[in-house]
Image 1: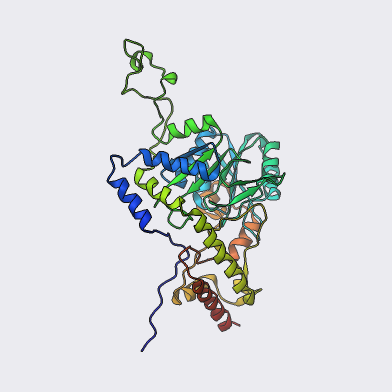
Image 2: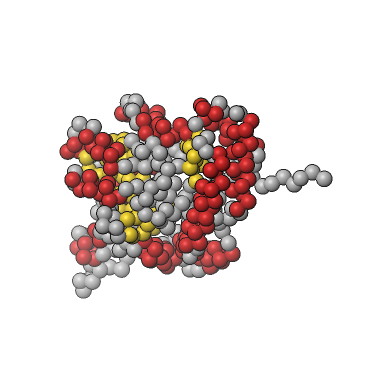
Length: 408
């Protein structure tokens, strides 16, 4: 009898249970499908988890980043520092509003923006008066050194946006040793989360911006829905806005600036709230798997090394990334990934440095970011998701070992 073929193990996968299905079904059977009570509940849940004063749900993480650029008032003539090792959306959001990108390098061992690389980006920019903000990216679940970054940003009067799409459920430590959840905005102005299926928590698609700034909150809510405001205190057209008694007309609204249709639906947010109830378990299980990987991969060192760890808070792991010197072992990364795929093991690369993308090379020329290039050359994301069994980690490590053995 032949051995039964094992199921393919993807690098990431959502976890959906009966509670999630019931939550979505209840939303579908309700009177609301979009911008209803489930959206408000999800936002309240995110406030409870992050500790921020406000949480604003929107269509996806890209929309959330764009909204942040808008509420900061970024535009033509402004420049924003962004680490080159990130997904395209972080950088593209700057261009959406007409501002220019200043690429910062990253630590080659962690992939994170550091105070050193931030300082280098500032010092290397000719027009320092144009610098208005820095978008910090937390990679793989590990948070950047927000305390050190905040200090440098404050010196230059730069606003701070945290792209925490990888880091939900983690914590951060400030210069005084105080710990707050990622998303509390204790050392930033705005924080962005994504709820794509491979993230720790999913809504299918969805995003959230957290902030402690009341004015930012108001503008985020208007801009995600066409720029519409319904607060009578801010109405401009008095003759249209109010009836003969001086009360606001019940149908009336105004648009004071150009907005977008970036709303999230009740269907998405019902799933999001159900998923958030499992966040503690999601983070704990991912942490267990990471520790098991760390232990199991010791036998493959130094050929395979887990990405270096930082100590700026507790990590809510999103990806498990190893670094492999493919040139040294005599196998291209492409072939290595294909061999793993043949063994039923999925992998991915996070990310191609954005400064290498043709659009940005054409706009800014070919840049030198040795830290990001070094990280990119060796990084490989291995399977990591809560439904994995301990035996799956062994299967991945055995697969890595078999390829290395064939090429040594």
